[in-house]
Image (cartoon, rainbow, N blue to C red):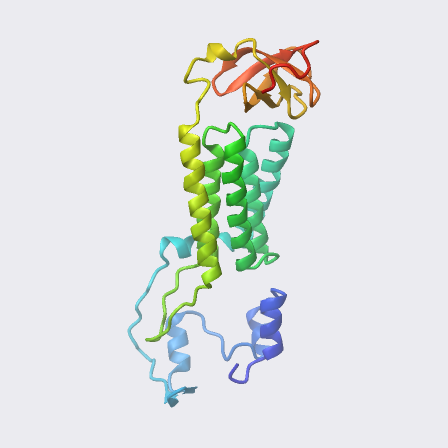
Length: 285
C-alpha cells in the first residue's frame, strides 16, 4: 500500500465505501489532488517512487500524453457502473418483472427484467463481478433449457444469448497489461462451464430447428383442439395444447389453472381460446 490507509482500502473492496477528495487526502488514501492531467504531471514531477528496480525519480513535467480511449466493452462496463444508470436499470427491471407477472407468457419483459436487475445489483455493489457474471450465465442456461419446453419462437434463446454475452463480459473483462510478461489467469473450471453451456445452447438450437411447428404445417390443425391451462388464464396465460405450451388469450371468461381450454382460432404465435366445459383433461397430450 506504500504507506497508505490499508483499512480504508479493505473497506472499499469489501463494503464499497467511497470518499470525497478532501476526505481521501485526510485518510491518506491518496498522495495529492490534481485538477487535470497536466496539473498532475506538474505536481508529481521530481518525486521519488520505489519500484521493484529500486528508487526512481519522476520527470513528468511537459511529458507527452497519449489518450488511450475505452474500447466498446470497457465503455459498456463504465456505463453500467454509473449510479444513475444503476437506478434506471433497477427501475426497468422491476417494471419488467411486474409486467411479466401481470401478463404471463410475454417472456420478453421478464427476460429484460431479470438481466436489468442483476446488472443493477452489480452496479450497486451488492453483487461483485464474479457473482453477477455467474448469475447471468446461469440465467442463460435456464433460458436455453426452457426453450426445449416452451413454445417461445426463439425469444428464450435470444434472451439466453444476451445474458450469456453480458455475463462473459462482466466475468472476463478486457485485460490490457501495462508491464511485459503480465498474463491473466483463467480458472479451468470456468472454461469448462462456458464450453458446456455453449454445447447445450447448440443442442437446444438444433432441437428447436428440427422439431415440428404446428403453424407451419397448418394452423387449421389446432382449431377446436382441447388443452389444459398451465397457469391461470385471466385473460392471458399459458396452456398445453397439441403437445406444446402456448401463450393463450381467453375470449370466453377466465380459466383457472388446470382447466380445459378449446382453441377458437390462431392469432400469430398465440391461441385464442375459450373454456372447454365438460372436456377437462381431454386432448392434453
